[in-house]
Length: 204
Image (cartoon, rainbow, N blue to C red):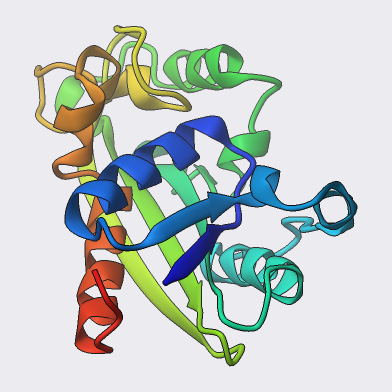
């Protein structure tokens, strides 16, 4: 089967390819960059929804008409939710500040002096899978943990350098990609996608 991933985020694309490649090697993965130029420029997916599901659906519905009648399309939206900030930045995680470093610094400033056990946070991912007939199915994944006292590690992207799955443990920024992908919010959602595809007897 041909599966197009509706993202222009290099970090997300790298993780998705690593997760899918090991479990469903027969699936041919493509991205927006693999489309002919005229279709690449036609792809427009403004994340204007107020939910992860809404944004994921915007992406797959924008890409679906551009990939051919036999292709599946996968789109994902995710966010970082800090309990002490009433779930912020949440669905607005990518727009919380001008870049990854600034976004992490903004959260660390807001939680300055707060004890570790009160720094609870979670990553949430929603994956929308569009079949060749244009029918979407949604899958969710969550990973709970804590905001670290300081940014650590240069691996990953986004908020990885300030997220600890275990209190006092290493951040995702200190883990290898394989270690993070073993049990991340995105991995959990994609595992559900792969189980679904296998149940539909899609080759893999």
